[in-house]
Length: 65
Image 1 (tube, one colour):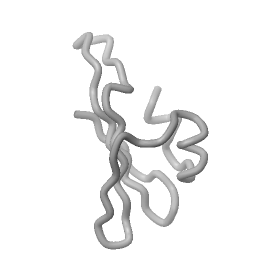
Image 2: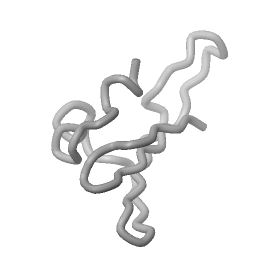
Image 3: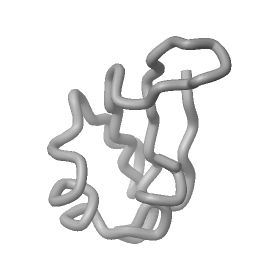
Image 4: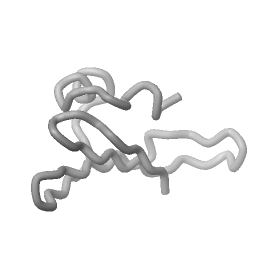
């Protein structure tokens, strides 16, 4: 659900929906945003970190740790 919520959204749309990231990282022209304990996995019953990779101003990839 989280992935479908943020994928292809702009930075501002993401901030408006879920707030500012816990930390960010800039590599070249791409940004990576990290959200700690925002995603709950009902299978493992644990919260995870979400990593949003922003390319050309929009979220293109979402990873979970």
